[in-house]
Amino acid sequence: MKSQKTLLFNDTATQALIERVAELIISDINSGNLQHLAFIGIQSKGVPAARRVAAIIAEQCNIQIPVALLDISMYRDDIGKRKSLPHIHKTEIPFDLDDKSIILFDDVLHTGRTIRAALDAITDYGRPKLIRLATLIDRGGQEFPIMANYIGQTIEVEHQDDFVSMSWQETDSKDAVYIVRK
Amino acid sequence: MTSWTKKDLLSLYDLEAEEIQFILDTAAEFKKVSERRVKKVPALRGKTVVNFFVEPSTRTRTSFELAEQRLSADIINISASSSSLSKGESLLDTVKNIEALQADIIVMRHSAAGAHNFISSHLKCGVVNAGDGAHSHPTQALLDIFTIIEKKGGVKGLNVSIIGDILHSRVARSNIWGLLKLGANVTIGGPATLIPKEFAEIGVRVCDNLKDAMEGADVINLLRIQHERQKASFFPSIGEYSKIFGVNEDTIKYLKKDALVMHPGPINRGVELASSIADGPQSVILEQVTNGLAVRMAVLYLIAGSLD
Image 1 (cartoon, rainbow over the protein chains, first blue to last red):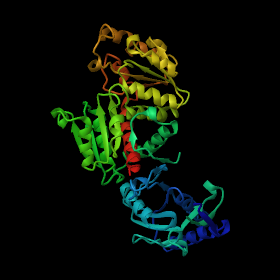
Image 2: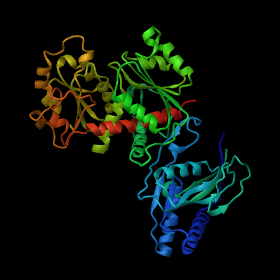
Image 3: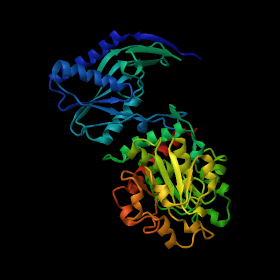
Image 4: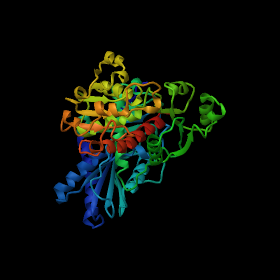
């Protein structure tokens, strides 16, 4: 059966989501809540999100925030439940996590299972002072008690099985958000 | 190739080049796990791995066991002497019993070539070949190729010479299959009695002297003389073998300065390889051991992920 893909946000609207997240984080930086700040982008779609937001903050506030890459494959709770395992992307954390304020980035917040895996992975690398979550889209349907601190936009999907999918200029040639019905 | 789907690793002969590359790419990420403060991931939590070594092994078994521990698997070790094989039970009955205990993966070493192909066709659980007779030792070849790629940036077009007892060597066969699939030029060298000429038919260059095998090589992989497998005399004496095929201070001059010296271990120091070369700047022997752990973690992870 062919899946049906509907455009939800075009490139301009997607850019607005990124700017919204940057604005929320800048506001927290200005209140002095985020000492020794660093970003971690979850592979693969959370990485451009983290980099774009870091670039906006660098431009507006003249603060360089280091961005790490994290692949959570080894921490998934469905290894052996899936039919096969996908390619593991690079994990690169070029700084010590101890006592940092970490903002974790993913493109879409859905069940929360990816975030659970990422939290376990991060605590194996070090002991940050705090971890917060940024996402461009919160689509609801969380299965774990996990909420995002910085949200580009909260949306409602018609069917819980619908899948919110992002494409990035860096990897897919354009910025956009789609709803995919299987 | 975007995902791994095989439940067994029996031989590199069965794999496509892109499948070999997939394992090596996965291993590169697992290598980093062993470099962290917490050298463990929960990937195989709740999975049971049985290490069934019908033939003795120290380094391969230890490496698999550590790989399993770093993946958080539950582990059972069975050796030939502690298994019911010594009471006359058949191999198939033994592995069926292991599977009935809900084992997810059996890592087996066996002296009979093809033993793994036989059991895997009767089992639902995953089977990893940790060596079968003179046939295949896929994780050793994978770690050798991983080490070459790490040091040389790739393997395609490189000249790799495997020198020593090719006839009895599963390491040689596995390396030859893997290296040819990835586009390397493979040479085998050693006493004519220990070099199966059939390899020439699959594109391997065959040499019967050390100088030809070493000159122009980017990598030499030296193999131990396997006294325990040799039922006949293939050369007059160990002393003579060492004199003609030993890599030492005199013969290392045939080798390019930036070429790698590899050995799967255990080394017979002073026979196929002099201590000064084994411990010298061109040797990557201990890095092979480190990389073996990463490769085995990757293999177990991928297989665990493709079990029903």
